[in-house]
Image 1 (tube, one colour):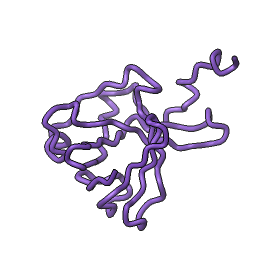
Image 2 (cartoon, rainbow, N blue to C red):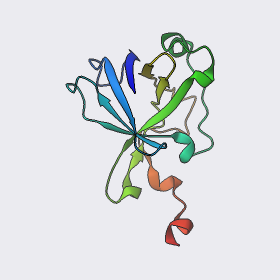
Image 3 (spheres, helix red, strand yellow):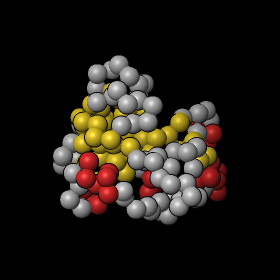
Length: 135
């Protein structure tokens, strides 16, 4: 699905339109529709990894993304993939928000003082259940 960028992706401010491709419903690939400004990003649904991922939406984000309710916005996080996969990292401090109804997306940066439990490079291994992985 294609989205217009209503709030810039940090470091990729010239990216105006993106395509969000589902990998399996929990993981996604985000690519610059023009193919000019960014490599593809791997995104993950945060609820797959942590149940405590709750934050207040900034009013500017709600307005720019034209969300009528918080449920209008899907939250995804950028994942930096490494080998082996448990060495990967997730950015919980700067989530991407998608309004599928309006086809708008953007990135916000959470206040690290208000949300000290969220990191820009949180190790994936912190959220893997190693006992289940061993069986």
